Image (cartoon, rainbow, N blue to C red):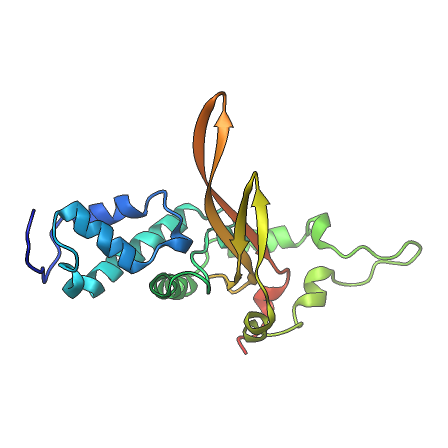
Length: 219
């Protein structure tokens, strides 16, 4: 479908192309402008030919990111936070997409609430604040201690991103409010490694969730 002119509507196969463009990409570094540019190449049209279709492309991209996010979700909400997309340091258009996805995810009722309630009845040892030797263990642990520490707004104002090293690559982890409401730090990147003499590329994600932050007020 080659054309030198501008399009006012997308072709029927545009969604398939957007899916192919996003699959396997580092979504924290992908903007809508880049998606639109890749789509123009795939459709064989000139640069800027899809400018009139920005909103339609945004809707398709947002829906596809939400699907990719859902596929990456674990059994409970804390695992789902690992698949949250983009960050404050991501490109402006990508951040807009992430905001739309977060709003959509927040409105969706959690199917794992009951299961999580059972899990939290016996918190993992790593999440429980250990009492000093010789003293009886008091009520609550790290979650109880930190659940009223600050608001999400204060966290975003004061938190500073950092880097995590995977292999020989440094991954940026900026502060983030996850779609579940928890706060923390998140980053994603493609990492290569040698596997039996062959170089393979992996899509890696690192998520650091502040325990108890899901209880924090918005501001």
